[in-house]
Length: 409
Image 1 (cartoon, rainbow, N blue to C red):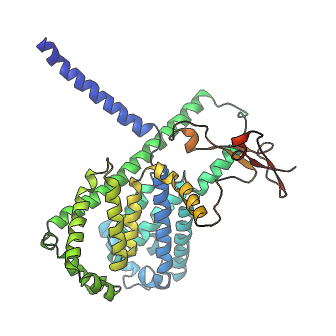
Image 2 (tube, rainbow, N blue to C red):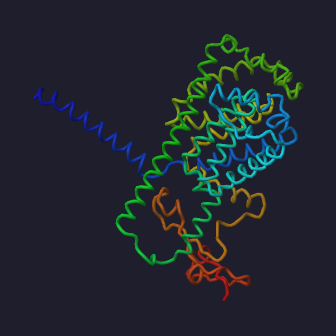
């Protein structure tokens, strides 16, 4: 009996390994994860870089243009040694540089809005990489992270939520009422399924790389701080607050520095949070840790005058929040607006289309993730400009929540 149990142990371990492998493969290929989180990253980094370019608009020629002390010729020599490239050094013409700058502004705006995201994400990554390489000696940790995230977002389907692409897809699905005129053949169906699976795998791998990058960043930063004597004795924040480079408001820095015990506690809490961050991602402790990191980055932005770096890190932390958190935000905002007496916007209703809500089911079901929309009259007919007639159900409780506006013919 003992020998049979010993022989059964490897088989049990083999089955467990196969089960975990199958579960991991299903997670990787089943459906795209964190669609709302990647949309937040797209909006955040696109808007952040757009604001950055607008902020530096008066100094653009001195930083990236032909008037920079780091001339295009010197940049080209460095690129030959490092392998970097920037389309800003193709020509020394001021007109060419101005066209490139306008292109960067337009690309950042379109990427933020989610217009043709597959193409604009590549253009946005090229813009960030080119501007980063052109002024390589003026960059900091925030610029490095923006560069990495712009490259990672190319792999993700960051335009499927909260974007113009998602809005266009909803309208197209609503107008395609009824069966297709011609059913696709078996080869076309297999090709479509293979394309969907490949897109899902690449997206999920991109999300995994983003989370690993943020974990590596926090973990390495915490371990480097542990090795420093100033962080061990709790005086690191005191010295940072007394550096003129990080004193946008000297009065605020001196006021905060008058509480050494508080600064020591904040210093130790910073190191502990950063070291523990990679180990609390799969439990409920990640929410208080993310809250502490949010407060830390806001303090860095205000007290130390590093808003770009802080904004970059706050946006990166958003990838760890689940999609149900983002889907719960619109109802909460509408409820808060009603309590404050502000005009709350009704749930999404397309002009001339009626949104059919999900009828029960699991909160992660397809119906709640992608509401079904259909035309109010006809087959995708455009909504005429004119008065509307409200149709209501004659039954009691359903009458108050199930009425729709139908265009009058």
